[in-house]
Image (tube, rainbow over all chains, first blue to last red; front, side):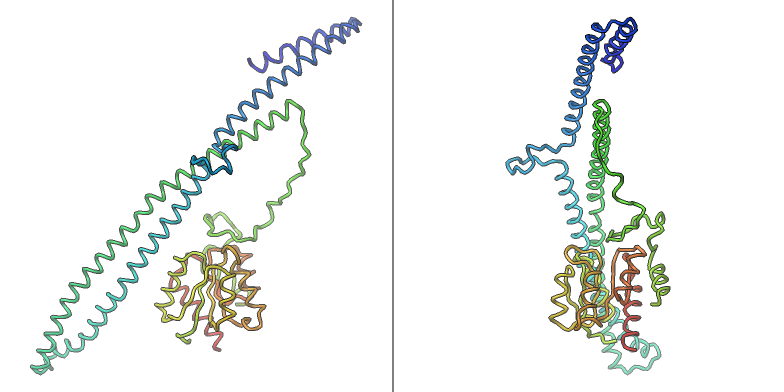
Length: 258
Length: 128
């Protein structure tokens, strides 16, 4: 039934009432008012019923089942809990990747430093050889050292190569975390839509029942700057209350006399 | 600058502590300790003789700015050099940290060079 069809009886009774009042038919008019009242109640009842049903549907779509909340018996998790778990997975994966990468870097630095140190040690000796300043026994010693160094270089650089490939592989988290984050974004969007829907329906119920809420005007003044910690600023180019980088910090501090 | 000075690194993310520790090691500072927020850092600072504090801002428990204020109001610790290394980038916050007596402020993401410069600058002044 359309809203218009539902309102039809109300319109009819109103017309009848007007005619009866104009013709001075008071007793009949009183009966019509009673019928009108009944029709109005009926209409409200149907409307509220309809809205309550869709409200219930929306809440069900939220997947937050009140009967399950707080009950450890149910294994089935709400999608909200699931989203939190997914985000925790992102933290874990990124932490693992960061640690693995740092392990490899910490493992590689001494190897490459040792290679550099050894090369720098051999260089003056080698130059003496190039300048033909070497005695035969020194030359024999140098060839042995050079041979050792070449072996070491070949061996150690393969270690560096393997560490670098492990660093490369450690970046595979991006694909996994990207997928997980996309799903959470999708859920947040669905929740937002459901919330907007709920607010609209609550407004509709208020409208047809004529309910007025005593809600104070905006309590939070959003024009005030937010001073608490906020974490990384993701859109510094769109904000004028944040610095864009270290240069801005240095400029601000020096303007304060630092 | 004394390369043996004792440094406390405070950050709630272990990976960030590790990054800072590695960068400090590259700069020649190997005497470092770690804490994961202000409330675990403060007892360490009080119990031992640290020469330098590097702290994040946004941490659960006690934040870096509260740690800085606690350090400045403690008779024993009040002149401890403090470097803030944080993602917090609002002008109000930088001003608040400056007013609370921070010695340097590095915003994340940062470079090894930026960290080095700030540390050198802090100790040029402290040693002067």
